[in-house]
Amino acid sequence: MQNCKPQAIEILAEEGAAFVCQEAGRVDRMSIHQALLDIVEQRKAKIKL
Image (tube, rainbow, N blue to C red; front, top):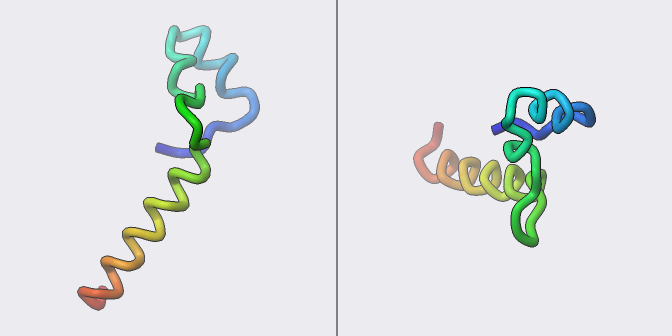
């Protein structure tokens, strides 16, 4: 899922989906995205893609 743009919460709230851009827990969305990218890159390096 992409990082949310500044106005995204307001737009999604109109559709009843503001939860998509709300942080849950102690880790922000950008940190989660970076961690996943790091994992994918490590795996790709192992299989040489």
